[in-house]
Image (cartoon, rainbow, N blue to C red; front, top):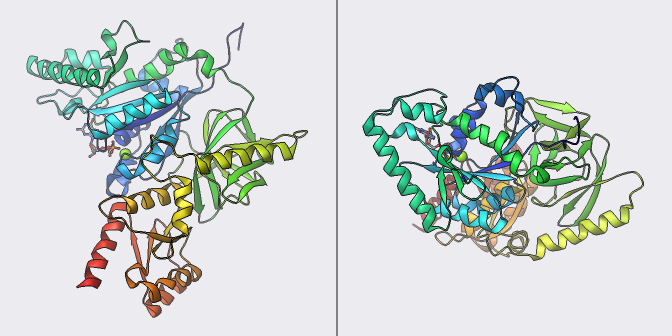
Length: 471
Ligand code: GDP
Ligand code: MG
């Protein structure tokens, strides 16, 4: 990089908003993929991280080759919108440089939009509003992937006037929540007044505008924050049981470089675990970290990036905590002490702004003498299931939990309830395989194993099952 211009890393951007506002669809539209269509019940159940290289963004926005993009790309994090997932949303947010709040233009601000605004204020994160589904305005003339001002010019007077009053309504609703907003093309005080970008995730209008704001305007206002730094900053998003790779952790590398062979410390409920990075995997660019496809192997990965780490001893890593790299010459004891401090904090602090479970609640639920057994593919989903089980309408205690496939041992453990309380003699298995020996043993002993592809269905089947028992 020439002169005294700083090298910048990719900004990290989080997508928030009410369920069905179009968060996943918008991300799909940007990537040219179709995750939304493949999601179980159309619900995003985990945090996904997608890297968009600057060159793809250039194509997508028809930027001229000579127009500089100062950042190497953009790392986008999509979060689940359902209520039980508020802890995951909070986790995604804490590492973001900017958020995109998606609002359905036909609905205006909704419950989780307001909750998102509250979180953004708490974490002091700036945001842009994507006023989505403009193609739903009655009589909208489709202008595929056009910049929004151009698309608006082509609309009839009726569409223009409906657009105007709906926009005004949304601006008023933001005002009521304490935020000044304006459509970005009329916004002269971009630093003070929040930008609104009208979009359609269906036909792509306004999407170039949104991308341009993220890669051209944003780096100018937060240059210092984006200055690349060798100090490693890395947060664990998810712990996953992968059928070929074993336990892996998905992390967001915010700053610095991770290398194969690096000695790292992860925070677990049992204390710091020191291990060696065996492999670093990323999805192919424009694909999502959680998408189950082929991965690219790397010797090293440079921030900002979403990375899947393969190493031993990751099973109990706590989502939301740091991954610490121990460099040659670093004091291992000191690094472990730092990890221990973080573990203590993660266990003891209950974020006032979070409604979901905390790590402590997860471990105290574990000690419940009577309750059901929950098994999931990742800590994030496990927490979401537990939060949903605890929510006022259902309130089901949890006896124990595990990650990964359901084995005989799990059935044996869960079977303890057969003698104590029959209605709890159940394993709720989410997104995991049930081994044949496990199903056989369960059938023999009378333990019920329930599987479903959404958290909501899982809990519904269970409540139906209890009703059946009582009748
Ligand atoms: P999320 O819950 O916020 O992730 O919402 P999704 O991306 O799953 O979208 C919810 C529904 O709205 C899906 O049926 C989408 O196809 C639809 N949708 C999303 N964005 C748009 C849009 O811009 N225009 C139209 N017409 N439909 C949209
Ligand atoms: Mg979604």
